[in-house]
Image (tube, rainbow, N blue to C red):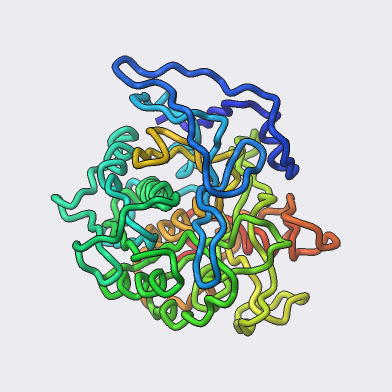
Length: 414
C-alpha cells in the first residue's frame, strides 16, 4: 500500500491546531465523493466534549470516580461510507508502520493484546472487519478464534448496556490501531459495565487473567483513581495508558500516573524529506506532569519532579495528523479521522506485542535503558507553559509530552 496522509483541510488547519487555536478554521473541508454504491459523505453529529479547532473530544466531562475516553474526532471531515483506500483520509496502517519502522507483517504471531473500554459497541467486530479487509490485513474474528469480546468478568454475555456517550467510537479506534500495528495478534476487547474507575480497573485484571500479553487503556481521570492502582500491577504483562489530551496545565491523570503502567504521550507526525521520511514534534494537547500522589519510580531520574512523571513514551496523537478509523455505531457513519492520546496507547501496546513475550519486563523501566537509536527523540514542540523546561517541551532526551521518544523498530520494547 502507498503510505500517505490526505491533509483534507490543508496546512492551515494543521498549523492552527499545533498552535493551540480554539477558533473555527476558515478552510473549507475537501469534498470527496463516495465510491459507487456507497453512501458518500455523512455529516458528524454533535460530540460530547470541547472543541479544538476542527476537532472535538469524543467523550465529555465526567464525575469524580469516572474516566473519560481520550480521543478527538475531526469534525470538519464528514464520515464516509463505501470508500476505497486511496480516498480514505487519515494515516493508514502502512503509514504508521513506516513512521515507526515496524515489522508488522512478520511479527506478533502468538501474541495477545487486550483493549479495555466502557459500555458495549454492538458493531465492534464488524467495523474492525471492514478496516482490516480494506487495508489488506488478515481476518480477526470470533469464528476464527482471533477475536473475543467479553464483559468485565470475562464472559461473552451479558454485555454492558450499549454505548450512549461516545465510547463506541473509542472502541473502534482502539481495535483499528491494534490491527494496524499488530495484524497477527489475537485481540480481546473487554467492555466495562460503565466508565467508573472500578469497572475499568477490574476489566484490566480480567484481560490479564484471560491471557493478554499487553493491555491498552485509552482513558483517564483525576488522580483519585489511584485507589484502584492494584489492578494495574500485573507483573510480566505490559499495561499502557494514554497520558491525556489537555496539555501540561491539566496535570497528570490516572491510570497514566501509575508506576505500573507505560504512560503514553502524543506527537504531531508529518512526512519529511529527512532520512527517516517523517518528522515528529510534541503535540500541544498531550498530557504530561508531575504526580501529586505517586512516588517516583527508581528508573526515572529527571531533576524537576520528585514524584512520578508522565509520559514514558509516545506516538502520533494530534488530530491534525490523525488516523483513519472505521466506525458505524450511533455517532459515526463510516470512515472518520481520529486523534488524541487514545491513538497512541494501543499503538504502543501493539509495538510491545511485535517485540515478543513480555516475561521479565519491569513496567516502563526498559524504555529508560533502551539501546541507542531504538527510539526517535522528539526535540521540538510544547504542550504548555513551563519556562521552556522538559516538563512541557520537546527536548533532547527525556521530556514530559513524549517521554523517551517514539518507536524506531521494536528494540526498545523487548
